[in-house]
Image 1 (cartoon, rainbow, N blue to C red):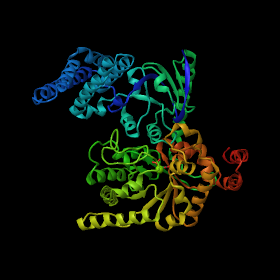
Image 2: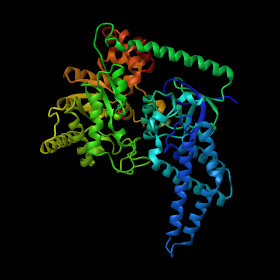
Image 3: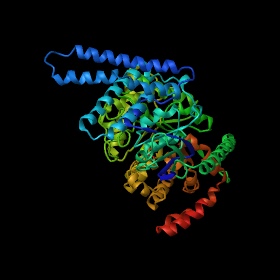
Image 4: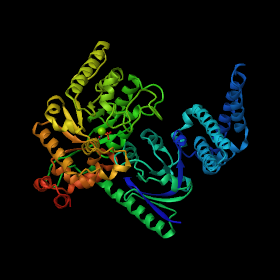
Length: 584
Ligand code: PEP
Ligand code: MG
């Protein structure tokens, strides 16, 4: 039976494919298709991993001390029996051979099926066996990962269409660092129960240019593994079991979208200026160093925001050391060929936990009002100094700049600059090169900062408005919580007043001001931001040409004249009329 589910569209495009339900355990593994002809080798990897776990269990069993509780031996015996049952490996082997799934993916698919069957069993003893099966499977997955970092090798990865049938991930929730695992995978769409438009998961989905709908509430319960889905990332609709007529319509829309994207490419080399010749600068937001390649190709004049925490978030053990970080930052700087690169210092906490699956490395808060971003960095001065030294060293090779997130207090600013000076001294003592005049910028993303802007204007070389957080904190809405997603409103008069004031004050003081939140990459808001006087936009590269198209058509002189009426409108109807005149 066909039915539709509605959620929040976060990454545009249309995906048509079969649902792949993903559990937490499954998120921990890579998902890709092995090359034709390599199925047997992949199946052998699975068998080897089973063997390895068998040996491990035997060793554990033999090494049990005499006085070990009897349950220990019984527990290991049960695990040994589960492992010995050929049924556990049978279906994954089939999935590897028939669908070319990588071994870990095939095993987690089987694990999910088994766990689902067990969830329907009433008997508490048998129910408990589900946990044993999960633990055994997880041991095998661990062994597979150890074989060769899950053997994810770009030569082995197939493009989405090559399976014959595209797959769409359906999950209760996906953490931002888990999302990154799918960057090179075989999936063509994402549906999650939780999430909001500017949650970091949504931001990463957009950066992957894969259609995604989040906040669909019960999607993972209502959609079954293998269901056909149409995912409309523009409207936020997920159609389950679509009929032939509907499929045909969506296929047409898909073809049309591809044609439009091609047409847009022609704008790549056009100068970025408005119809009345106001020059505009378009920067890119990136999560990983290699994103810089696309940014340059699409004409970005620099990296306005490098979310450096994505280098840290996927790690269970140690954070990357100075050398590792330096090499990554330098890679971006090199790829940008002398253009500026704003390296935003680590912003973990809230919806971005540090360490895969939890805060294994150090405690960060999960509340957006908690220990996040610079607040966390200042409580971990050694980690912060390591990052600062790495950025400073990269500044010897190009225009690396330091950008600080979530500042609100003068004493945080003082402490930040004190540590920057200390990092410089440390490098000086070591005799290592850096740019002593490196530019330091602040993100304006807490209303308090916006309200005391002169403090920031006086102390920083440049400013960048993080509208995602500015909206979250001004309207008191957790940006990752779908229950309040409908209240997340970039056009709220309070936001427009804040933006107008920040831009105006910074321009008057001649301090470069950009917007690097999602508002900058939303082409429906380009005219509004131009009207408010913004000339520097930073967005994910996939949005660059769409925003550029709006800029080329706009007349800033005319738009600016319409701003006072917008800012005077407090009643929704008045505001809607004033905005319509401005944005139409
Ligand atoms: C913002 O808050 O707008 C921003 C760009 O930073 P992030 O989305 O990473 O919090
Ligand atoms: Mg932010």
